[in-house]
Image (cartoon, rainbow, N blue to C red; front, side, top):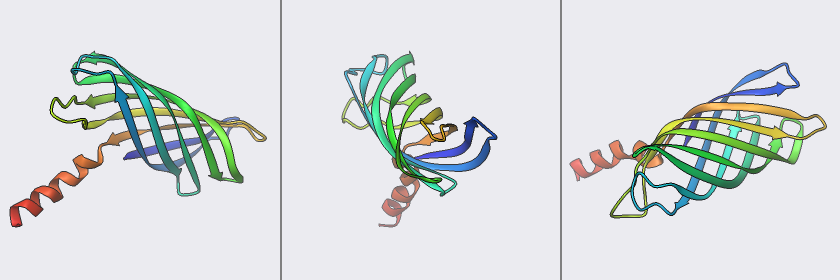
Amino acid sequence: MTVGGTAQNVSPGPAEGAFHLGGRADLLLGRARGSDMAVGSYVDAASAGFRDFDVGGGAEWLLPWRDELPLVLSGGGFVRNGGGRAWSPGIAGAVFFGSRSYNFHSWYGLAAGLFVQTRWVPGPPSTVDVIFGVQLDAELLAMPVLLLWGLFR
């Protein structure tokens, strides 16, 4: 889950602020421990101010800065519906910094951190958006509910 803000139409301007809400799933391969590099793919869906809807995917590269605090670079394509556009293609790039755990007993690892993303939709009219916020793993959000469920069960 990604939550934050969007500066829409940064180029050519004037920029407009909006609330960002989205979801992102990725698959990183090649990691045998927390200090290893990994490559993989991602898919995401997002909305800015509930006025438009973006869906896309691409490749990502995890660079281990610290064992559990890597930098993840990603880039790919997306399509946007809304804001005067009908499924217009675009290019996206993102940087994530935060916790990306490595699970020695399962394929699933938790993620939580900060991200900055740019999205370019070629014209006419051409537009560049900058998105920033927090990326939280859905399992982290579900843990309190699951703990309470187990406690009362």
